[in-house]
Length: 419
Image 1 (tube, rainbow, N blue to C red):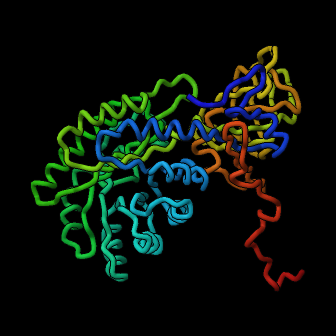
Image 2 (image 1 turned 135 degrees about the vertical axis):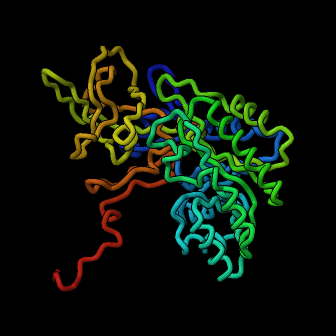
Image 3 (image 1 turned 90 degrees about the horizontal axis):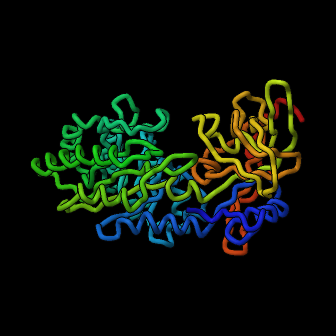
């Protein structure tokens, strides 16, 4: 459920007309519903209220400071994959003891930053990373708490680009050799083995892959205990999907019940890393139609938003529903919705049956709250768009639109080139 609804023929974000925000702020823009974000976080976190757990929001899905702050107020933590995401989480007030650091390519500098920030745990993904963590921790007089991210070779039944739990994936350590790496880590002076970690993919719409992975993790945990390595945390990652089109993903309650049945009698704190399931349907991208191009073969609706603003359709062939901000009696047409970028892959929808739009009409690209702005870029020297949060009958700009000056900030022309 989300709070983007028509009142009369006007699309609203909670109680604010979307057209009013677009008139005040300009387009394109990202627009989030505060009530939806809060409802989704509470629904997910609350589904695990009867077990020891920590909900660490996946910062990569939406790294807006205001959104991270909202979840921190609710008691949430953060799943990070870079030093920059750590900086954002701390800036937003996330308790460092609720931060877990994932990712295959942590640098020594990033590791030191995280150690000095006293985060909860590192999810390590290679033998060499284990040694580097021990070295950096020893050098600065710290002890690093770690979980090894194991790759359980479970098919998540999702898009191959966002599948992370198969043997051919770059992520994690093969579950068959995890015991060996745990034994090594447990013998290092500056490491503390704290948990087991796993993340099999994103936009999963079935519970069974999670259950299959958890079954394999339980076997590993039992083997660790038999060797004297007692873990405290079980990090199950994220990946629960949302409805973009016709998907029917499980409700967080169904997801939680399936996992809790498997976790029965396990004395562990469960770490969960939801991202898309919380923010995906809590945000939209608002664009304005610039031109309609018609040919005998194709109709193109050219809008002021582009693949640099929302790359998911170009990158994954992903579906995002397209809705008019002002509803009226419109005939339907099959068209491509495209942007101004000089790439044939610059589209928001292809061969889509959509209502007829005319120049200056406003368009809402739905389900854009996850991996939307966070994956945006300045390609074609386009300033990144603003982010806005609707709260009841008010709205707040939580990130200003970039300017042309922002595009060249930090750049310099060497003196030898002259003025």
